[in-house]
Amino acid sequence: MSHFINDRASLVTDAIDGLVAGSGGALARLDGYPEIRVVLRAEPEPGKVAVVSGGGSGHEPAHAGFVGPGLLAAAVCGDVFASPSVEAVLAGILAVTGEAGCVLIVKNYAGDRLNFGLAAERARALGRRVETVLVADDIALPDAARPRGLAGTLLVHKAAGHAAASGAPLEEVAALARRTAGAVRTLGIAVSTATMPGTTPEPRLAEGQAELGLGIHGEPGIERIDLPRADALAVRMTARFPAPIAGTERLALLVNNLGSTTALEMEVLTKAVLATSLGRRVRLLLGPSPVMTALDMHGASLTFLALDETIEAALVSETPVAAWPRARALREPIVRPLPEGVSGGPAPAPSRDPAVAARIEAVCRALIAAEASLNALDARVGDGDTGSTFAEGARAVLADLERLPQAEPAALCRALGDRLGRATGGSSGVLLSIFFTAAGAALAAGADWAKACAAGVERVRDIGGAGPGDRTMLDAAIPAIEALAASGIGAAAQAARAGAEATAGMERAGTGRSSYLAGSDLKGHPDPGAIALATAFEALAAESK
Image (cartoon, rainbow, N blue to C red; front, side, top):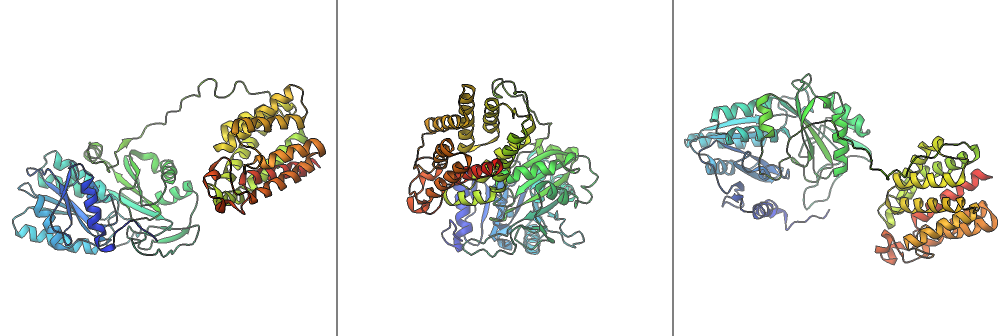
């Protein structure tokens, strides 16, 4: 797998240099490369308690990305997924610790415990006041003797950082950090492991599988499962949270992206978690954000924190650190009515025609059944969503079938145009809306079905700008409508299929996303929109026999 790096040996130092350079002067680093890699504030606060943390790299923006006012005074960076050395941790402590002392926040991994713990002892021997706080928020193994430290560590950073910024003494800062660490729990889920930069990924999960409770270094999870729907997954994950989370009425929730999960997926998962019985107790939401990542892992973690007034005040306090996910108090969603004019006026009165209903249903079922194959075809020449676009429109029409004016052709076409215009995205949706709207107008003016369809196609050509040979669904529609007028629906279906298949030999596209591709990429692949239209004509012809 390719990565944007110079070489693995300089990966972490290069990344730190990039972080410091892009901080606008807010951050600095210690002069100790390559053995000592410490990021610290450019303007220290020697009169206040210093909060220091760190660990292996690969979890960015944790930890160096959270150095700043109200958070960390310094972060000590190890190699990817490896604890920094004792000497590096000691350098970080000594660089920022004054008379007020230091709180050292450590994730519960053996390497971190040993290196941070010995560095704290050495700092104390040099006269520094150092308190160590261990974070062990992982609930993957309920009976684990030493639970791992995961994304909950960041909430401990925020609590300690807020207390330190407020001028609290060392004992109070450490006590709040320990109380927060004791009240936070985390569980992860992923469908892929992390890829070490400069190496080839080694998948251990089959398609459709997920690993529940895996660690932030790619360690195997407690359970390998078939990935369910997001809402079912949320129920399954939240049901595993024990006390102090279970039974607590005021919770904070951090939804963490483990690296490469899309923003859309993270928002879906967030909605699903908030809809669970545990999620309904959430008062503060942080994220969804990538804050404690595992390189490019496709996964997420849920962190719940039992709130008290002091911890809540710490979480909502402001910090200028850009990477920090602001805590937001949850409110009921605001839904405003549609503006006048968007819905196209009053809905037509429904009417019933069993033959028309059967034909509409046949076309819709055929397009829904073809969703996956059309998406696969579109993935070769576009963005892979043609099948979903047509299926989305088909599902919307099916949902409204009994409310359509089935017995009134002109009104039916206008209703279909309105429904497809609202429910179907992309260019295909608006073009279908244009077609049905124009066809409805022609029917209202006295045209028969063949002439009305021809008027619809002509209107699509005028507005869309495409024509025969431009490698669009018109290459199926135009010959189909011509055949419909001459020989009927069976001939129209055959002409549509022939026109659609002919697009595979066209080496250019006149419009649409395919127009940005080279002829060599298009050759041999028919246009997915034309294939969808041919599928619709064939279903209509079969039902009309």
